[in-house]
Length: 307
Ligand SMILES: *[C@@H]1O[C@H](CO)[C@@H](O)[C@H](O)[C@H]1NC(C)=O
Ligand SMILES: *[C@@H]1O[C@H](CO)[C@@H](O)[C@H](O)[C@H]1NC(C)=O
Image 1: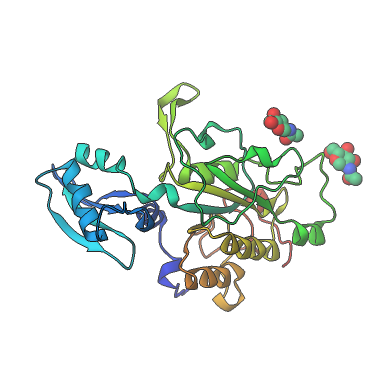
Image 2: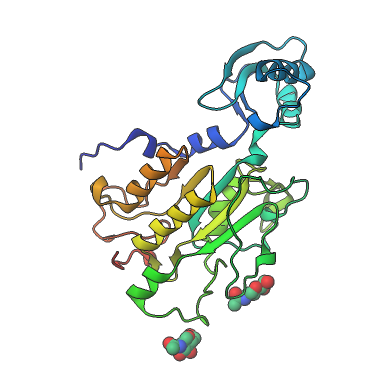
């Protein structure tokens, strides 16, 4: 099937990493090129301008490091050649932008007790944040913290398609009864968790790509799937709440963009300067099973629910 995707829709996950992670390695030599994103509004008053602040930040981790570029429009920050150690200390510089970044995730909800959402060492919630932590079944507003800064749920389209939610089967709240949303949101922005392992295998530190970014969960997927009207409402609200990045690991069969509510929502978000990362889906272009929107990863979710 011949497709002509809009390029910004088609970015693979590493591009999300590029935007949300403050240090990006671009080469494998001894010194590597790193892109350092700075929080524009966090420039200390002692510096006359941002260029001076960036120079000073770089000098504080390396006398000899050479700045390659300063960025003022696509993002705020600079690129420089650094050793791994220098890059690490750069991460700890004040003004490092990532902790100001909010990733809105549309998915099956979140398990707030997961250690990946601990907020140790995180500063206060960004001032620009407008979101909320909505209470519901087995979920209270105190389940949010400085890492998980928002949790909302969208069910009207789902209930219209399937009937009232049976709360003894699934939580009518942002609680993740499935695990998928907890997995995707902690992969994007989970805090560092030491001594993690898979039943004793592969032990080490688990962390998300942007471990200092904030997470806001928009639950739009339920036991039987996710419907377009809820997904669009989640995207609409996330934009209103001021997320910086939207991450959607859900989708069904491909359709024309003017018919695809995620594409339409993503376009609207892009126009507001929000980066949108969408998964490609599990079925490629040959799917005959998946007629409408459904989460990836589980065949059982692939069920037409209507708009
Ligand atoms: C409700 O949340 C608690 C964690 O606070 C969890 O242990 C329990 O299994 C949850 N119950 C349901 C039905 O999801
Ligand atoms: C809700 O789910 C429970 C547990 O599966 C079931 O026993 C009950 O009959 C369901 N209620 C309705 C109204 O379907």
